[in-house]
Image 1 (cartoon, helix red, strand yellow):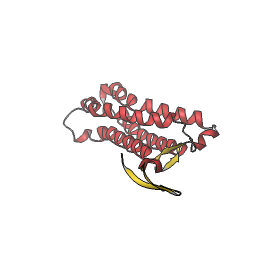
Image 2 (image 1 turned 90 degrees about the horizontal axis):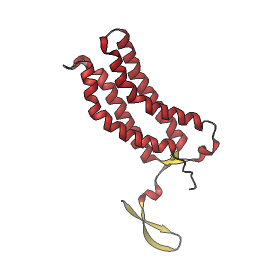
Image 3 (image 1 turned 45 degrees about the horizontal axis):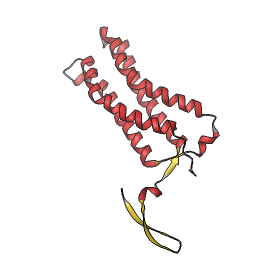
Image 4 (image 1 turned 180 degrees about the vertical axis):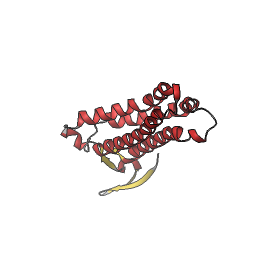
Length: 165
């Protein structure tokens, strides 16, 4: 933990953890920004797969391709949209805040995950393996990363800390 010296009125200097002064941002803003990232990333990769499926790129493996991508994005998208919908009319959540550093971690984890998902589709023309083999192989790194992303987003999408708590 990082420590710094802080002063209080007429009291001697004492040590205080640096995180006491961490920047807080509105939780609703965090949720909306993460929802935009997930919708954009998922729709981009999904659109490419729709086109490739319609053009016959995957032949008889179309169902297996979609069996790979849907579990990779739908649970997270479902949670994000459900929470946004549930909280859309809840004015009490407008006072909720979260540390910016945690939001940044969740955003970057999400971006890396969505980029690796897209990369698995975009690299197929240059790879020596069949597309479905690449997709299966990608589960080796996407699975653990999805767990980290889900944990970070889960905290942000169920958190209810208010500014004054």
